Image 1 (tube, rainbow, N blue to C red):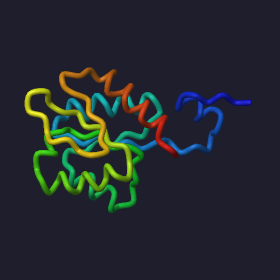
Image 2: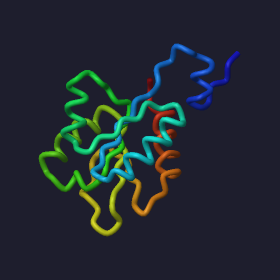
Image 3: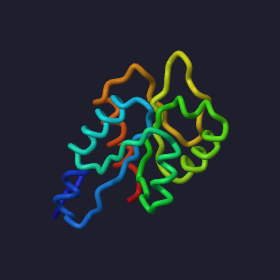
Length: 134
């Protein structure tokens, strides 16, 4: 019998299991690149996007994320915030936000505050993916 506690273990036990997809939406290339690289190393299909509009295009093109990692700066725009609220109601959303100028809270979203290390973001994303039904 297979005891599949981690994503890697699940993939070994169930080889036809689809890799989870994470969208990383941030205007900061270093956040997108570093988190994307670590998630891909952990067996997650991570896609970096510079804007929320890029994310909307990907979703419209048929790519469905299992989780969205979002830079909190986008939540200061009311229209963007409303669109993201609709997404947060349907799938896990993790906001990387500022301690000094935090965005208004987004119902349903989890928050991790800066300064934060990539390993902490990675751990939170993997924990959220493990809890979400797939």
